[in-house]
Image (tube, rainbow, N blue to C red):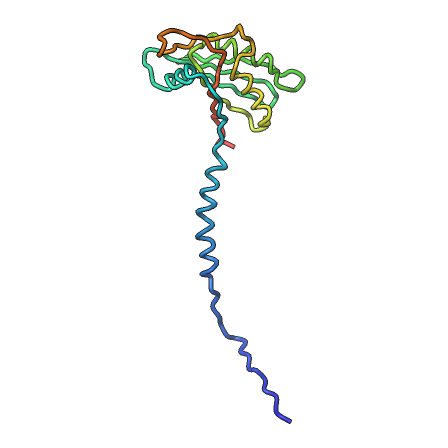
Length: 184
């Protein structure tokens, strides 16, 4: 009978781990994740505006030293009240719309925004600064109340440069900007 040969095992030996394939995967995944995360953060609601209103919004963005336009902010609060803050120069006015049965009173909000728009007909932009506890669904409902007048009698003058005269529109605040999205 032959003699069995036992393999010799060295227990104290060292070996190298090849990390090149793992690094190659990571180098390919990082740019993909960075590019895809840029698309996740940006969100816009496109709406078809009349050209006259779009031109008025663009004109509003240009600095005009002769006329000071009001800055309008709406603040949906966690207790379901809404504050409308109108700042014109150094004058600041805060209007409150109380909650109705623990929810936003959308009809009262709309009426308050109609009042603000009537006093500031050239302003088409508002900023929304919601509390963190206010749901996105509620914020969208408030934004819907701000965009367009429900009553066909409530129309606002807009200067049409092509025709050289004022025309009317039922859009109140079609340009809505979230002002505190990076805070929390």
